[in-house]
Length: 108
Picture 1 (tube, helix red, strand yellow):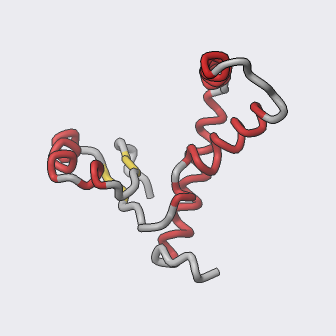
Picture 2 (cartoon, one colour):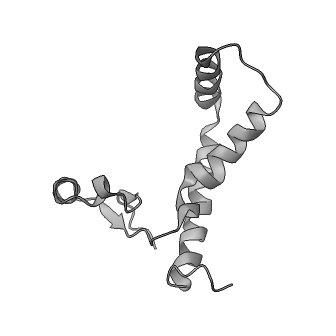
């Protein structure tokens, strides 16, 4: 159950697990959720946001990297807050399932 405080979920990349990073996070007093190894489906941007971005970009062509960047930036700004909330709520369920199998994705 979430504590009502700030909860941070980040992967096990070296910059995230470095002692200096851990000390800073401790100073903030944030609750840290462990991220099981090899569990990319716990990143909200991967399973929720990028799927919608893929739909938005489908079939479109851009004349330059700048055009693409502007289109994506505008899309992100216009994306409703509710969409972000839905992604976070789905994350809670996914994280629970991952914990129930101990991070072992071989179990189905």
